[in-house]
Amino acid sequence: MIGLALAFSSCSSTDDKLPILGQRQAVTKLVDGKPVTDSSYQTIPDFAFVSQYGDTVTAKTLDGKVYVADFFFTSCPTICPKMKVQLKRVYEKFKGNSNVMMLSHTIDPAHDSVPVLKEFADNLGIAGRQWLFVTGDREKIYDIGQNSYMVTAQADSTAPGGVVHSGAFILVDKAKHIRGIYDGTTEAGVDKLMADIDRLLAEYKS
Image 1 (cartoon, helix red, strand yellow):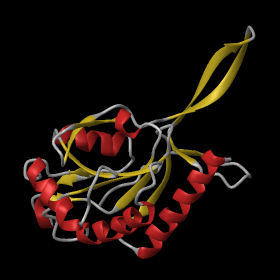
Image 2 (image 1 turned 30 degrees about the vertical axis):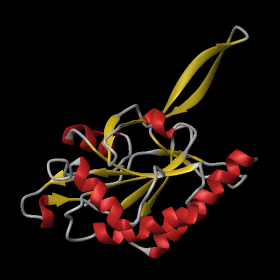
Image 3 (image 1 turned 90 degrees about the vertical axis):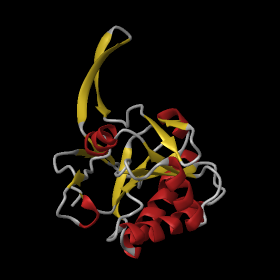
Image 4 (image 1 turned 90 degrees about the horizontal axis):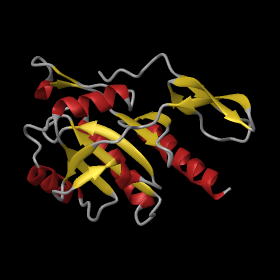
């Protein structure tokens, strides 16, 4: 089961903005010669994975985008099919919106090669670069999941498909802050995600 980080800070305001999730630290800097302390929230660090098109995807690829991240594997016999049906709803709603992307990380890179991911995306009816499926070094994928996206997956030979994980979708803003974590296996969870994407996009418009 994906574990959500229990010890995190959030910041919300009275103007209906989404909270910022994740660890927070105080940062002091000089402003007009006087020390000013402010909060600095964790961000998604740079990364380098390979997409279903065979090119390198980094954090810069998502610059200026609101995006939804998730972790899956193509041979998953349990919840992944539900997750992809639900994430395709997000894809269809925001298709063509240049401000929104989806980033799906395989947690079984030994099997999920570039051609496998491309076939998987094709079978879902995904075209273009708005929804990227990425593979790479397994430990780096697991590390960014646990330490940055606040979810985890781990190998377990007793589990169906050999991996234990759950269906969290993570909403990330243009500053690489996590703004929400949702149950990606249910319509209700994904309805909330889509509504929050609209709220987040409205923040930038205002």
